[in-house]
Length: 310
Image (cartoon, rainbow, N blue to C red; front, side):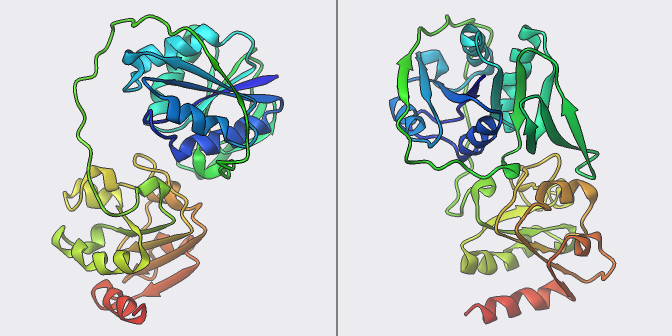
């Protein structure tokens, strides 16, 4: 058995989600190969070759791979799919855009957002907003899998010495073209990669009130997040959203301020190592998953926390 991991990268470096996906691939048994499809992506390929446990890095380089358009990357995956027992990608927007196309063309069922590998053909994945875990066994010749990064430790980024092979790039299929990208800029850590996250909910009351969380996030060097209710209310941008329909996170510390704890939000953060909840409602569902809970007025408690942190 040989597993193929589709690397998520920006041509210059790998995304952290790739390291978690390599761990899942290794647990499937057999060698692990990594596909880097990009444009002038030598740096990303070199980084992939250093990942512990990777046996081979396959590089497909062409200008039309520069932005990771799913139509072209999927065709490249299909071009080299023969001989692989497992094809995996992170369960991010990138992976979720590519792998359904691959699964459809291979005429197999995709196994989505796995959190555990039980054996080469059996996997666990959350269902019902994470309230139940399904054990899925696949009889398909090729297992096409997206991996929820929070379910697996990251593979060591160094220590490997994989061979690198360059393959012919498939032709541009012309079905899509990159138009532009607007990237939110922030001095804070990226939400899905942050070790500490401070999130606010509808209990904040307004977008202006979110500013009370900034000193706490600054003290902790934390990313800032929010519940869907706060995002839908227009308090903060969409890219702050944590939850089933937002970003799935598992930081070392998650501070939930004014978040009631709807099932959809819990699905996105309950795997955090330590959860601290601040809410005036002692019956708020967030307390059911919190390691530490504070019942009270967040507008009094948060400044006190900041003062205690010095």
